[in-house]
Amino acid sequence: MRRIKFCHIIDASTANPLLYNSIKHSDRKRFEYKVVSLAPHGVLHSQMAELGVDSLDLGYSKRAQAPTAFWRLFQYLKKERIEIVQTHLFDASLIGLSAARLARIPVRIFTGHHSAETPLHGKRMVTWVDGLSPRFLANRTIAPSAQMKEIFIRDVGVYEEKVAVIPHGFDLEGWRSRASEGNVRNQLGLGNQLMFLAAGRLSWTKDYRTMIEGFEASLGERDDAILAIAGGGDDTLLRSLPAAKRLGDRLVFLGPRNDIASVMNACDVFVHTSLAESFGMVYIEAFALGKPLICTPTGIARDIVRDGKNGYLVRIGDAASVSEAVTKILSDRDRAVEMGAFGCTAADEFAIETTQAFCDAKYVEWLGKHE
Image 1 (tube, rainbow, N blue to C red):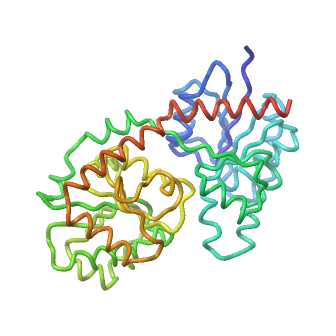
Image 2 (cartoon, helix red, strand yellow):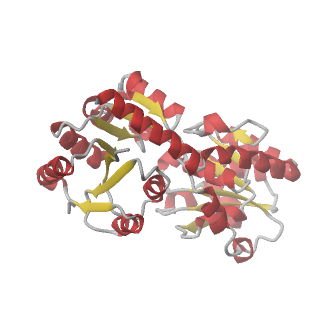
């Protein structure tokens, strides 16, 4: 059996667990991988060396260098006789898929990561530019959720037959192992308090305002629960919200954490009120640790959350809906534990061994159609 020559192209050279696990659990006897980053050499290249995968950096740090990066990449793809190119994120997709098309690479795959957020900006030009790669340069598009596929078709204008839903895969064993390290509840002095946790960058697209207002409305004068928010970014505006001030020390900003698995394991309920998600990795991470969800029906949540069984789906931008869900949890803490157990079963469906086998089969199928 000959090995298929495959090249991943990505913007950054920082650590990338998704790409690392994807390659690690792929059929390495079937695929010969190369990885190219636009950014200069970094941790990503060390990760690839650990896997025995050749990697290249294009030294790209500003868009004025795009022509040089494009030409170097075109020559590399031709020299290595690459058969499948898969790109990740904006610049890597425009440059990588353009070079791949000129090099006549048979299978050119655009991967959806943040395109779900593009329509939120309300700028047709932004949506149009973001859609150049999946519409014109790629001949295949991977949507990590069914909702993302709908967005590609409805908002971005990608032909339905070009889009396949392939969810992200997770090293669940490794995630659960890391979660058992440390004792965050003791560090935070929680005692018997119920901990609601949100985690993610402090961006307006995550809509923490609605979360805080909904939580404050449900808590009233109760002091047996806190809302903790973990994530990098400026929290000044959130702290200044009237609802945040009324919550006082029942609202805790943890900042960026390098032990997020342990932090998530310490909570009782995971909350995510995002306006949009292509997938929503935190949903699976929380479920994997047996935590019930309170979340908006974004990304994969719409497919895995069973309202009242393993979590509660709340309306986007609706603090009253969040308050109602929090109140239900507060009124029956034992039920929350049962809901988390149901969620744990849902997470098992996203084990990397299962999702990557499905993805590998798609790669082979697509190449067969273009040979």
